[in-house]
Length: 422
Ligand code: EPZ
Image 1 (cartoon, rainbow, N blue to C red):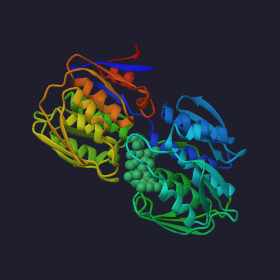
Image 2: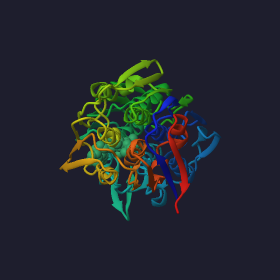
Image 3: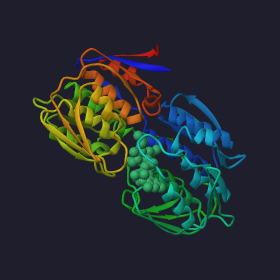
C-alpha cells in the first residue's frame, strides 16, 4: 500500500489543470447501456472509481477501448447478462447507477446492494421505490436487488422524499427508454445531473425543466438511443479542493479547465473568509487574504454549499481566526476527518452534526489515516500547513476520486511525495 508524505509550510504558486468530474463520468458511463452506437467519452478523470465502473460494464458485456487514460470508446450493443456482481459493486457504491438503464433496456436485472460506507448507511430505498413506481417488481434476495419489468418500464410521477443525486440520475436513464412521460419532483439539479439531461436531450429525448427540481421526460418506448460524443464537465469538487489548497497556504494560485458558475457557493464562502477570487470563462484565481476570518457553513444540495467540500473547509477553518462552525446536513457520519485533524493539533469539538473549529492553533505534522475520499483530501490540505512531516496512510481512498493529486500539488510547489508503506 502507498502513503503520502508531506512537508508543510510551503506557499504555493502557479496554475493547476482540473480534471473531468468523477460524479459526471459515472452516470455518463452507466448511460452507455442505453446507447446503440459506439460512444466516445473524453475528459474522463483517470481515477479508480471510473476504472471500477468501466470494469463492471465490461463484465456485463460492453466493449471498451481506452484511447488514452482520459478517453474511451464504449460499445454496449452486445450485453451478455444483467447481473451487477457484489465483488465489483462493493468497491464503488455508485455502481447502483446501472439499475435504471439495465431495467429499462432488458426488463430485468440483479444489482448487488452497494452497502454503506464511512460517511453513512447510504440507503438506496428511493432508487428502488422510483423503479417500482415505473412498473418494476423488486425484491431483495441474497444481498441483491432483483428487479423485473417484463412489459418494460412505464412513465410515472416520481416524488422523491429527499433530493438524491444518483437517484435522480437512475430515474432519468430509466425514463429515457420508458413508455410515456415521467415527471420527477424534488429532483437533484447538480451540474452532473444537468450534463446527463443534456446528453439524453442530444440523443433525442425530450426533457423539460433541466436545471430545476422538476423534470419531465418523454421516453423512447424502448428504442435504444443514438448518443453524440461526450466530453465530461470539469470536476467542481476537485476544483474546490485546490481552491482550499491555495486558501489554507494563503497563496495565489490559478485553476484552469473549470466552470466558475459551478462553484459560486464555494467562491462566495472564500470571499467571506477574506480571500480574493477572480474568474475567467474557464479559470479561477484565488489570492491571499490579509486576515482569514472564521465562518459558518451548512451543507445543502446544489446550488448550496456542497457536502463534498465540507471536510476540506474544516481543514481551512483551523487557519481562520476565531471559532468557525460547520453543520453537515446530508450525511449522518461525515466527520471521520475530525479525529485525524485533531491528531495534527486541530481544536475541534463536535455536537451532533455540528463541528466547532477554533482556529489559530499551529498544526504539527503526524501520521494520520484516510477514511473516505473527501476526508483524505482534508488531511492533505492540513499537511500542507502542518509543521514538519505529515504521513497519510490508506490513500487508496484518495485515488478513487483525485487524478494525479501529488503531481498536481508538486506542480504548485508543495513538498509532497508518494511512498510505499513501511
Ligand atoms: C452523490 O451521492 C455523490 N456521488 C456524492 O459524492 C455526494 O456526496 C452526494 O451525491 C450528495 O451530493 C456521486 O454522484 C457518484 P444522494 P449519492 O443520494 O447520490 C439519502 C464523493 O465524494 N438517500 O444525493 O449517493 C442519503 O443517505 C461522493 O464524490 C436515501 O435516504 O447521494 C443522503 O443522506 C460522496 N435514500 C442523501 O439522501 C436513497 O435511496 C443524499 O444522498 C438515496 C439517498
